[in-house]
Amino acid sequence: MTIHKLIVPAAVCAGALLWAAVAPTKPTVVACVDLERVYRSLDQLKAAESTAESLRTQLQSRVNAVTAEVEAMKQELESFQPGSAAHNDAMNKAILKAGDLSAMQAFAELKMESERANTVRDAYLKVRESCATLAKAQGIDLVFIDDTIPPVTPANLEGTMQQINGRRMLYSSATLEITDLLVEQMNKAFRAANPSFVPAAPDAPTPPSPAAGKS
Image 1 (cartoon, rainbow, N blue to C red):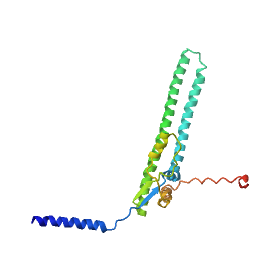
Image 2 (cartoon, rainbow, N blue to C red):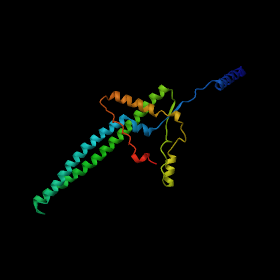
Image 3 (cartoon, rainbow, N blue to C red):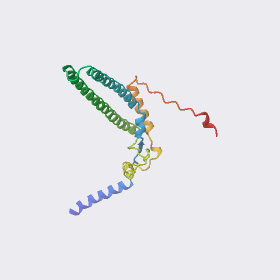
Image 4 (cartoon, rainbow, N blue to C red):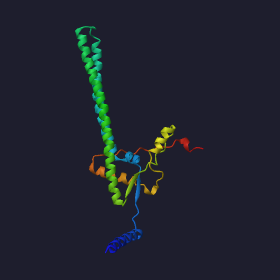
């Protein structure tokens, strides 16, 4: 009875190993994306840049208005007799207004930095979401960021090693590239959701100079 109990599991294990050895396995499908080129090509980021520029203009306008008030108060201060009550009162007001200006400038910088951070984060999350959708539709199992494209910038030994150590890929075939497909899919979805968005016209190529064709 004991021998029978031992033989059956052994036979099952042997069968499982034999099946694993002969059963066909599905190859992993891999693709790569040039993330920097994705960021440069996304309508989502171009629209965000336009919005950020508008916010920057508004904030700068407010800073300029307070700056003008501070300058006006400084000029007014010169019209009073130093040490007089009117001079001291005007000086205190100018100091308070200068403090308001400093606070507004700091707020503007923090606000713009926060907007830039949120824009980059939102774009990254959207890239991941869209990449997953594209990969599933194309039967792709893994999508890597192709970090072989940007050149290693000449620097000192430490800086050069930091650039090299920060990379994870040594080679990527062009046949694995899906950057254009990803950008096309994302821009199509963005324009459908934002019909008022008008993409900027591409820069016209610079015509060659007349001397360029002469030998």
